[in-house]
Image (tube, rainbow, N blue to C red; front, top):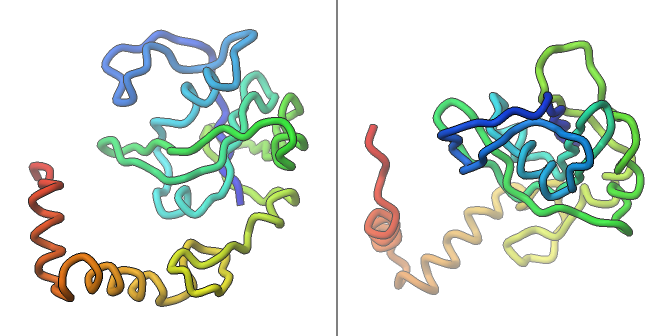
Length: 176
């Protein structure tokens, strides 16, 4: 699945959580400018967005940037995509860059999700725990716990409490 973000018209902004001074689309914008303008901040389902592999940024009805999604960050009640632009030679890029929006909808929501046939080759990938199994997610079912337990053993002498204390001391909780 891919997430498609349709940019509105260019406008200057101040106090943007991503440090941008503009959002929206303008003529002759580069792919980097389109990704910067389009990756956030949006009202989107964080779980759904973080499970997407690719993001298409659409401006004036055409795909102006394609990125591989690496994560999602929260900014108050909105979210931003984290990722890397892909370039010529990548099958998703080659199929969509400069072409009409492949996921149009009648909604006023600028964020939509859909399947792209070119994604099929990227759906199944090695489990991140290193077991050698393949999955359509970062980890095969239950393997995230295996990876966490291995790190607790290797780096914290087998103590989950030591891991929690280390996290709390290095990444203080935001004020609630």
